[in-house]
Length: 240
Image 1 (cartoon, helix red, strand yellow):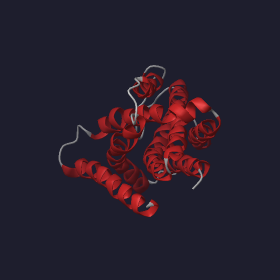
Image 2: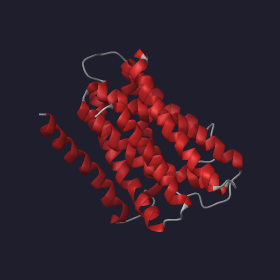
Image 3: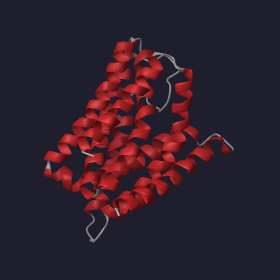
Image 4: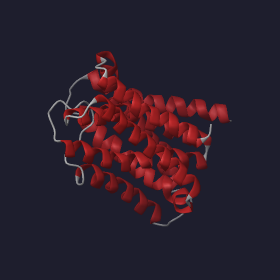
């Protein structure tokens, strides 16, 4: 499958999440909230088992590590320094309109690298590209919920909320297109994407459920990791 097609599918996840919010589809919200733990497990397995070995393969250069570091800290900078207020999931408190716009800016930067991840993964192998697409899509749904609920909590209407989610989707598509055309991104995009994915999984998603005790969130978290290994095995046989 072409990276642009995968980018468009990932972008649709943002819009689907936003539609669930503006139409107040409670079952959909519960399902997407449940995906946070599952997505975190899948994403951590993808980056630690699938991506980082490719990034550090065959060389003693420190540059791959520098780009992983830059991706990780870049997301923190965009989401928690330049953004006034941010967390994954439904925003239940009233926020200022500027908070929604700053969240849109921060998430757009992160969404750009979602597209970079998909395209850079496809440059390595179709299997890695598909695994990264799945990792991206799993957090695109709660991301759409997040931005739509923040925009509406800031006093904006449903159209603005869905429009904001569409902007995130377009940023993802732009990341795919830039990686296909810009040599530096093609070379170092996978390392940057590894840092971004690691941050989103470990620093954004895990804190959303780690305070909850018991198997209610532990099972989907471990299940997400198990789903990665199963998918990885199936893709290896398919590509085999």
